[in-house]
Length: 103
Picture 1 (spheres, rainbow, N blue to C red):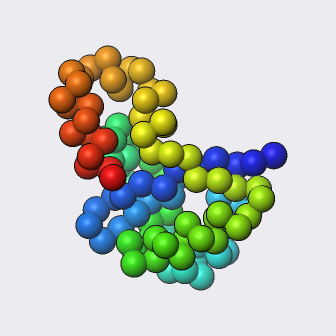
Picture 2 (cartoon, one colour):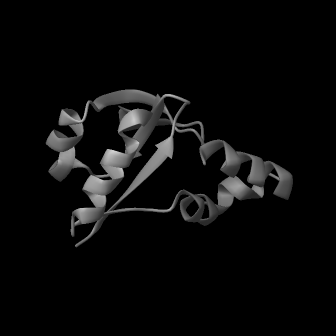
């Protein structure tokens, strides 16, 4: 079974990794990732438990996940579009602005 994980831009210097990462946690840690129980989701603004990793390591992280058969990175926009409650509170301009902030 393929695990889906979400990798989002958290700030100019960091990305977060959300999802069941137990099988790859050691590799994320070796890349410099740190587990954090108190992050704020960049889109929903809710508290999440996630890995945080330097944006400098983003390409390495993506390549590592792409070669694995058991993991795939979910497209950020499709995840946002699937969350209808999130979209119901905003007009089209605000939705595009929210997506642009995570891209």
